[in-house]
Length: 382
Image (cartoon, rainbow, N blue to C red):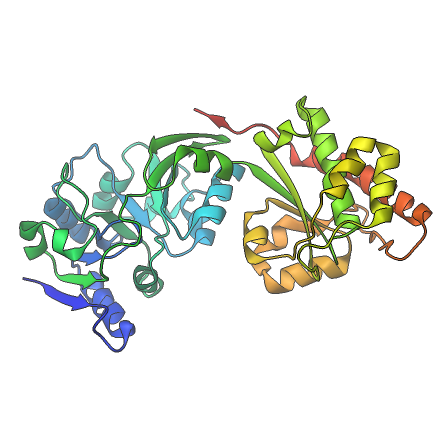
């Protein structure tokens, strides 16, 4: 029998991580916990280890295995032709219970450098399944090795998934080099597998994440940011919603069910504050419906989930952009001033209604070009 390390009974989890890394680097096959089900892992850079993993698993050639990678930012290395939609899924869902099947045919993909045995196991049709597991121990193992892991569920092909160490098939367990026992898996259900090709997606296996949630995750999110989220960014949000509804041929209410979401937030916002009376009045002068929407607005602060989920972040000033990028450097490429000429949109707070009118006009003028540059289209199911 292999060594079994009970993660709940050891003083330092790093000891278990070190043991797992040693076993994997040595060509071993290790059972690891994930948030979904237990998995069997081998170093993707070791073809002999992958062959052994296939033998232990009893995997058929027409059932490709997954590559577990350490960070969503690494996705581009494996799928250089990454589409906006694929990037959106990776950014929003990882670490977590989603497996993305992406094009790996580019000669620039690091997949092409893997051993032939690994390629046969994970890239049968020029696509590769990628996942960043949402388990701290398994992520720590990935951080300490060079390259990805080949990962497959810890059950014989065709048998129920193992959601605890005790459910790993006895004969299979005897052939492993190490088992990390992290207790029952948090979700105890396999990942959802999504094939993404360009801006189209297809659910190959509905696992923990249901179809309705996948559909919401596929939608673009535009985020407008100012200071208090009571005048400039709410005006931008409401105006943008109207312009997008016109472009997509739907009502503003129907926009919520379409391919794009629009939100706003403030770098110093107090949750629950309302749009200013002057902002509502300036929007009502453009269209009474816009004023009505602004009346329902409630301020919210900028948060990590908002920034991570947003596909395009438009700030009112350079200061707002700097604040976001300083806290979330990975968002730099998605964050820009709303005014394409580089001018700040001056805060009208405390000023007369005319200042709000000028602010709304400047925002509307800049939105025309910004919306056009986003090239918004509906994400379609294959």
